[in-house]
Amino acid sequence: MGGDKIIIEGGVPLKGTINVSGAKNAVLPVIVASLLSSTPCRIIDAPQLADVEVICQVLESLGAKTYWVGKDLYVDASEISHCEASDEIVQKMRASILVMGPLLARMGKVRVSQPGGCAIGTRPIDLHLKGFEAMGVQMSKEQGYVTAQTNGLRGARIYLDFPSVGATENLMMAAALAKGTTVIENAAEEPEIVDLANFINSMGGRIRGAGTKIIKIEGVSELTGCEHQVIPDRIEAGSYLMAAAITGGDLTLENVIGDHLKPVIAKLVEVGCQITEGDSTLHILAPQTLSAADIKTLPYPGFPTDMQAQYMALMTRAQGASVIAETVFENRFMHAEELRRMGADIRINGRSAVVEGPCRLQGAMVKATDLRAGAALVIAALAAEGHTEISNTYYIDRGYDNLAAKLQGVGARITRR
Image (cartoon, rainbow, N blue to C red; front, side):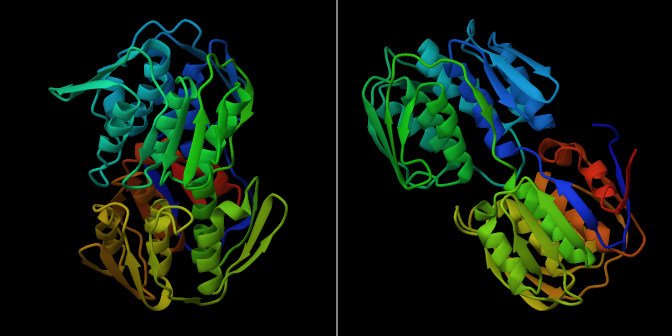
């Protein structure tokens, strides 16, 4: 990935074309779901991210084999032998908790430490555990570990108190090999859920209703390997749209699904951008002056919490005051302090932030506090006067495939060192 600092000289409008990579939030559960298969799976055009590397290490610690052929990732879980993922690896990334569903389905037992990841809020795993208990799993927690075992998963009716993406994915994977039918109510509706269901169905699963609030999974006795191309990354695409908007750019994105970005596109149009949708392309033309507009983050199909930081960066250059309400995670304004160092006028009040614009952004030494905060700093730096140095770039590498090179390709003065 190269270099642990990103250096940006701001003030250049982004012009040209960027090809969007496969979705981080889709590829991780797909890689984990390969554990359900008794034969190898091929994931076409997988994004080469730090998080993908970590999830592959998790699978290898369980006895699976993972290897790359060009841009395709192969996962062979035919001989998984362990039901405990390496502690050190699980601590690095929250998505590691997703191994619980497939391991319970394949091995009948799993032991994992409580997961790590970005420090953006509590994100408890209780919803996962309650769902597993309904499917006949005995659970015990001790010293930061969760141990779960079952004599055989059975279908159940599960109501999620909150439409958690991780819980929906974990329970869907467990249910794919359970005896009988599982119904998940108040399920998450994200496109990444649909992608995971399509992958499991390609392996021989029977999942209906993914992308709606009620998902029905009819358990099958075996799943076998398949080929699958993950959906494009809507958060990566949204981040580049914000970068184009803040720099007064004229940018085309290839490999995008406009439908997945509806709330983001609607806001960009509201602040003054012109956006044209093609079959798998989006073109954005930024206005001379951006207008302020409020957002409130919500589960899909609402405005994504994963785009909140980038939108806050954009609003620092908009005319007027904007209110940003964060309803999904309680600790997701850590980037505001770093944006202030660049000259932003942001006031935080509980779960809301007020941005007064337009601010004169100036280059500074800042640090990424989490993945999307890192993207927000890159966006702000592209519009700032002078030289910005962003540290903690490993956060950015977790979710953006080749960010510096892609931005260089559309005129940004950005380097890594």
